Length: 113
Length: 110
Image (cartoon, rainbow over all chains, first blue to last red; front, side, top):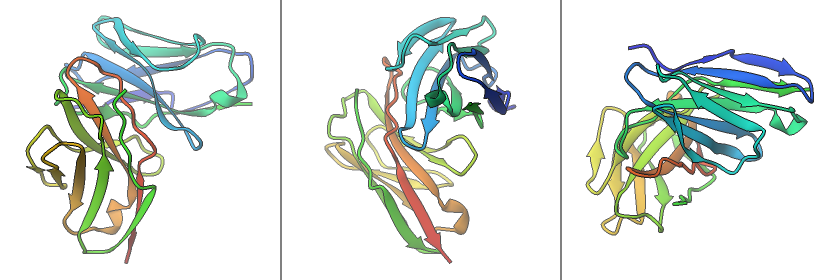
């Protein structure tokens, strides 16, 4: 089974621009969640999608948004980029239920200059 | 949000057992306890999970306290490849909002 695929691996943007990151989950997984990882704040939950609906959202500003398609692939978008948005963005897919492990991709490293 | 507390760092000698603790005093009855580890430049990797009983798999063992307010990840024989940041998180069936905390950085000495 193919793992979770995130594209691109690396991205450099300038302040004020917007960016879209992509995540392809493991086949059959309907839940996709997104995380931001920075040295200072650690791993922080952004949002989770299930069957094209956002089920949960973390404490991030509205500049961070996402969506999920009918094939469970997901995208997240960050508008009006700020320097502080530089981070590793990770997505994870899973089956439903608390006993289902999260399967992470290797992330997209975003640098905002 | 159900939160977990872990020591910032731990050190172990190669081929010795390692016990990584996690406190989760606000755990609810439907929360599963999950452990993940993250190597540099990679996404977190699933290690093990459990609900009430102790669990074993090829990677590790998970010991869960009787009151479920704490748990311990046990690596039976640490290797250099086990050096990573280990995260303990709670996940329930209904509310998929995960709090990872800062994790425990495990250093394994040869």
